[in-house]
Length: 516
Image (cartoon, rainbow, N blue to C red; front, side, top):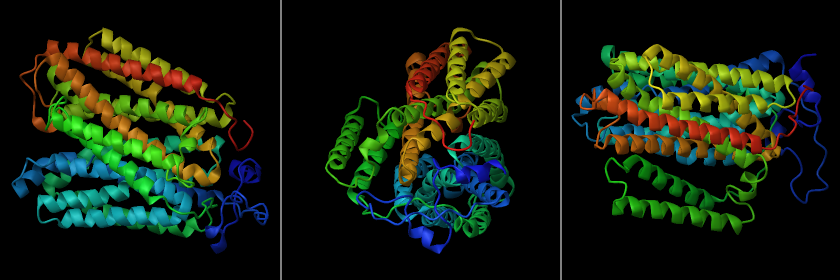
């Protein structure tokens, strides 16, 4: 008997029978429903069915991941066609704002209406947004269409992660999370290359048209198997007011991070007013959630000895690697005199090798009882590497070697934090907590990018642009930038040391599934 068949018999990992009626069933009786009928035993998924589901989920996630990287290299071409370069950044910002804001919405709604309806909604929005982007007659329409596309892309990730939790037991889930980390790596490598090729040799609209056949294939592969996936959602009233407050707070905060130090000075009245508005909206959300019987995001759900530590640990780790990756091209070009394309290639080790760390942690979770130790050791190791980078300037190849080791250690955090978090909550709440996790990770990533930029600007003492679209920053001396980056690496070391401490504090609950 294979592991998946064993997990179907594990009483700690309840399943619901497949079939049309199961789509309306919950994972268990709701509060007060003591007379609810017993749940029928599930029809086990075969290995081929699980494989088909996982492949289609990886293709779905690849769509969302690819669209975050494929657009950047085509921005100059788009700006030339529309004769507008002043608003180009909004093509990226609109997608980022929308995808961040809706992550908890799709996670919660998947616990209310089911994974099938939400994955169809997310993919449909993503495909429709892609078509609108490709047909956009002007840049204003393109920005709005990117927002629509972001609504779908932001829903794909939490729903896909939730479907994985419905198919695979927590103990076996870590190794599959590593596969999905590989999807992000592949998208990170392929996206800029495809974007450049399409923009230069075909047409920039191809970066959006390519999503249509991929999305249709993904739906065609996934939907026939969704009927057999166990369902755990529970129909209840949707707290739209709470969701609106949470999304509004997130959007305003993301605008602060986007405009701060760029359109407005960090200490300007406009940034202060926006930050105050974000805090007021967040306080309103907390006040509302405490007084609502069925809140959009139950505050108790993100409390306890596991969930807050897992969310924070994953957010710190992701923020550190995103912040470093965004700013490294500047370092490569100024200090090591690489071209823009060579700088992109030099980012591959830090992106690709983090997948190896995730794979190691995932395999460890399958066999080890004390599964979080590998992540504690990995993040502590990454913190030491970052501290070395902060202390010692070195040639390019030793730098790339240390960055690869840094990424490998950091990558161990992701499967451990995701699986521990999903393992700690009731089955009908997995979508909600997964959406919250992606929401806070996105906020942490944006905050870290802005914080690292502020560190560089403060140390360099000049108002420079650190985006890759700004061209080669010849005005910055290599010695000054080397000194400034030492503080960036030191900040990353502090974040990863904090990640290790958070994982130490996180309660290590036994994982449901086959015995280790």
